[in-house]
Length: 177
Image (tube, rainbow, N blue to C red; front, side, top):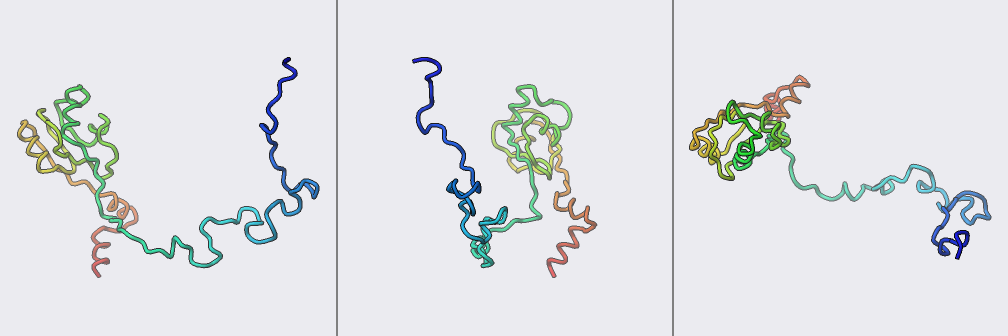
């Protein structure tokens, strides 16, 4: 065998079908799209479209509820905070708030602030300034000699309403009727 004898196996490389290149190509005239209609034309085949009939995804009943007044808190457990303190990633002095926890990489998201939960062992004497704290977490922090200050954070829904010039109270009054 020589280098110039090397070839791919028969049928290993198949050429691309060139449609609409005349009657002799086998895919001439309509190029395999059939006769007329939306599917014969370019860029018109809409996913889920049923020819004007109400589509299935709109006919079936919807379930659930999306509360626009719900608060989005980043939830952080005391055990995770204790690990950061032990590793030296979180300062023992000063006030620990959302920004400090976010910088340490433990509070992800939370447009409406951070909420401390009581899971895990906690022994550091720390001062917290957060949007929320569970009863167990508050007890554990105060038992360790720390303090917790719960601050009122303006919810994201209220910020959006304020941008539009509407107040949340006016929205609730309108909904009540």
